[in-house]
Image (cartoon, rainbow, N blue to C red; front, side, top):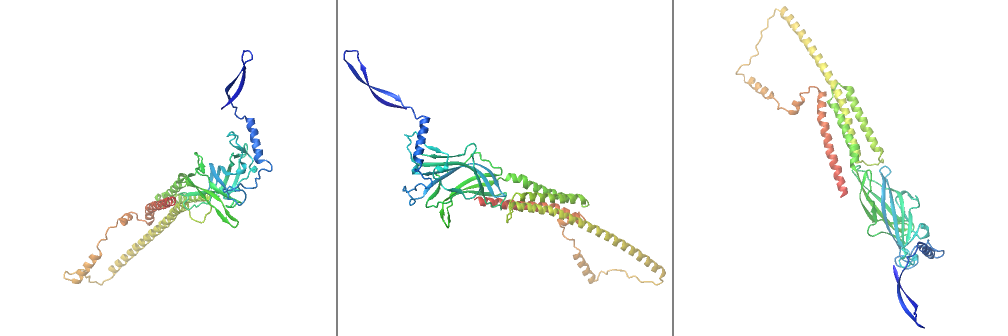
Length: 463
């Protein structure tokens, strides 16, 4: 940078009594303000605008009307933040933790200063109590802390025209009420709410900064969720003491289903299928079938309790409760099926024993009758006239009876199910065969109904 300076220079001429005056034009570069000079200027400006008796941080800046005093319009504060990370989303406590760089901007005309021709762009402060600050708080905050390593991560910039920029890095744990009816096929909306604690809307108004009020880090990674989108909105609240300005941003999270498919749904299906193995074991293998049924039942119960341990005890039924409940019912039904088979097997054995005893009694009774008739035939002298059972051809009553007998003795129509079940003579074997087909068909039907119902509900809620 150079400036043009004009000098008048006198030259002596080697002539007697003669002098000459000439005018020179010289370009001399102007040295910019040094660091020491800049530091002195910043100190002077700070002493000028923030010195004792010059600025009162207890009084809010003038409002949009430009007048001084409490009768003017409200002070407008523009908000924006940069979402640096989301460390966790806790389903049990219904909360989530974020780290963000929070920024506030407002205009305080009392802080105007001379920028020395653009050479002093802004002043930087690290003490927030030196200037007036909005009384903003996070209404759904549970815990929070500032970052002080190595130095406090906060600064205040004051610009020549009186604008103030406040930036700070904070970590927050915020409450997030969740609706878990579709868990784990659900989407959750977690909000971040910011409001004024003491100033009403007559004195202080929060607005989202135009353009890009919320920025999210590009490599945001969550273990079991995906941040689909976010929406900014206003949430002013009215109480007995007045109306307070409020801002909110809704973060829409979609739960990653692949984790639950591998850890919950596939193992439950495998346990249910393993419980069906008992249908193919011999009905006499009581220890094997009992141990298989009890083991799968206890494993399924342990799986269910482990799932519920990571979720809050809500009063409604979740999608995962329907799945685990039905799978547990199928496993329990397989165990009850063996109890029914064992009872039918003992009943069949008892029936066979009764038939054998009845057949033996009939044989003994027939033998005794034959012996008695032989004794009567040998000892009796009386003769009996035996009338042959012969049907005469012309007897009409006999023909009618024959037709009726032929009608009633017509063979029944063949039934495929009955003919197939007739291959298994005992009831216990029939129960096992029917269970081999019925259990998989019913479980497949349940899967069709379950997935179609909850996937369609998820799409409906998304739309």
